[in-house]
Image 1 (cartoon, rainbow, N blue to C red):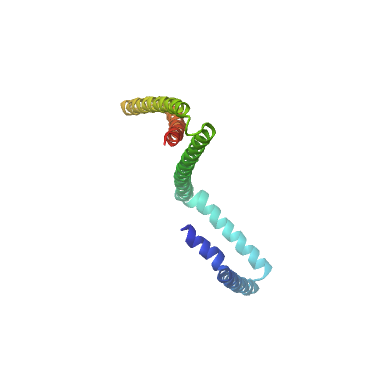
Image 2 (spheres, rainbow, N blue to C red):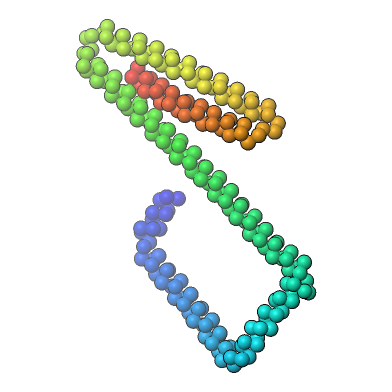
Length: 213
């Protein structure tokens, strides 16, 4: 879709301008024709007749609203307002869902890029360490490998703890039949905190694995 949009936006610039000019021309012709019809109709009545017509229309509307069928009129008005409000709420909800989906996609992309960056940085640090110490210094390299292995194990333990916390939180959500709004907010905050911790830990783990390679 992005490729199609760029091709349409940049490659078809002249065609788009022609289409815009044609659309504006059509609207101008329709507007001019409508105004001309209005002028012709207005010329068929005098000023006094036009004022009488406006007065009669106002009286008819007032009688319909307040005397003849006030219930029906008010029902129609409130129905229109209710339908408009429902459409606005639906559009707002749909837009929120779209924004949430886009936000999740962006977060996933940023997470992948961050992980790749950490892997590249980890490999660069490992290569720099080997170059600085020299391949002959096997003792220093083994010591560094032991440290990174211990750090990797620690990251795996942290990830296991985060997974257990997520499972407990999910069980808590399922067990609650009618959770209150503060409880839902607290659970959402805990879920967000666990997701952020997991992301940081996985990035660190990816860097350590890259160093050990």
